Image 1 (tube, helix red, strand yellow):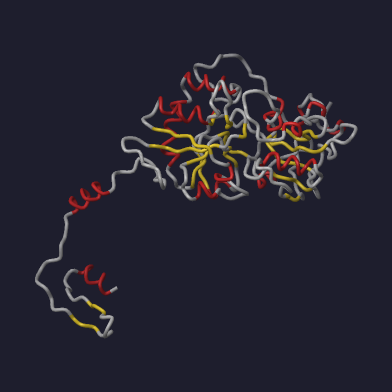
Image 2 (cartoon, rainbow, N blue to C red):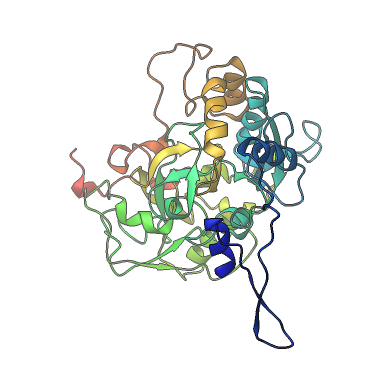
Length: 380
């Protein structure tokens, strides 16, 4: 402390040195040489020479952007439309999806370099906690995360959305041998075990914010349970837990089962046969549950205070006005969910998709996968 103290004042030139061999203090005679000082200007100059002004948050093992920001964004490959692995001939097993196409599209409207890498979703966001990869700064951000309420905001921040708030939650239950749901759509889930899709929105904590669309009451008194198996795909784990009877209900995106029906163009890492039981083995008893999100699908989830949002948002804003954005929306089947710009057809009211409808407005039956409210509560 003395040493610092002397420099602070500048008038005392007595340094205290501790000699290891003696342990006694020896006072040095005052020297006449002035301490080496540098002007403010020189300091700034030196600083610039040593440390160029950063264009983006630094990442270990990655050469930084010299002329412009160089951004590394991650995605997994198990979410058709959003983030998947392409298959030939369209794609040589590259990362694909609306997130990647928009991320790369930013280069056309901004002086920015964007790289998309494959990661596991669990590197980004885990069980109500930030993922280790994002936390450790292995990449700048993770793509296509819904801007939910709750836990994510305590660890992370979000860029601007690239899709409207189009991701309602839903509740899946098993169907009995007669094709009726084992839990009624009127249930507040009290006393029931609900399995969550770990790491995915809607996050477990936000079920408490959702309202039963048949009774207009919130859900309460349920227990969130963990999946009882690990297949490497969180949605698969949760559905299998439900179908095996280890949970009574599953809290999941209301369009997820539709997205997990297998077809050409994607390489599934989930159990196609199990998901094909939609409408025979399991169905939604609640759809259109919007209370869990404050904005739609975003381009990037990043560490709190990362500064990534400040880099990306002005570029996202510009890109959403382009024809390229419209073309990407068409390519991945998201025209209804995209933000309309001048290049979108000016058709009248767009049809609300089944899973976006609140349960009490459904005209479907359980065998379609979307159970309507039980008859006695609907105003018919």
